[in-house]
Length: 133
Image 1 (cartoon, rainbow, N blue to C red):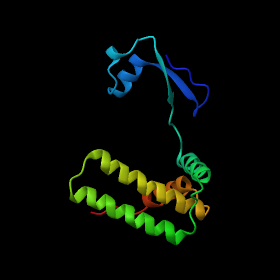
Image 2: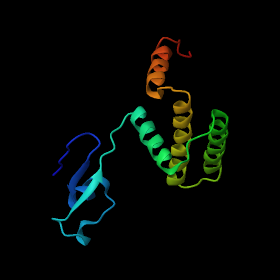
Image 3: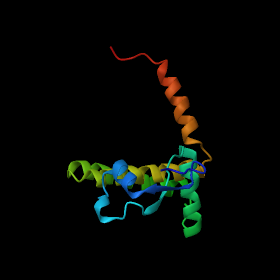
Image 4: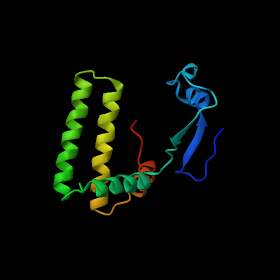
């Protein structure tokens, strides 16, 4: 049972359905009629960036300049490399990927860049390039 008012609304899903979708919650521990509010994440990159900036504004931690952001991004890339070199868990690897996207979103925000738009443009440009033989 899923009731979706709009794309980013909270959704009510029976616990048994959450188990079916995530395989992480064992329904035997819950009353099967119990309902849980779950946030539906179905956003494009611009929406994710806006949500991130909104959160940063609320916490008062907006970036000062693009140099600061790029330095943080390089730091996060280093941590990603470390997670590969040290064979860390997939979760730690994913966290580093998310941290890099976090910094990239900040860089795009400071420079008023629509990442999704420029990525799609680049994808189209790469179509016309010759493939390696």
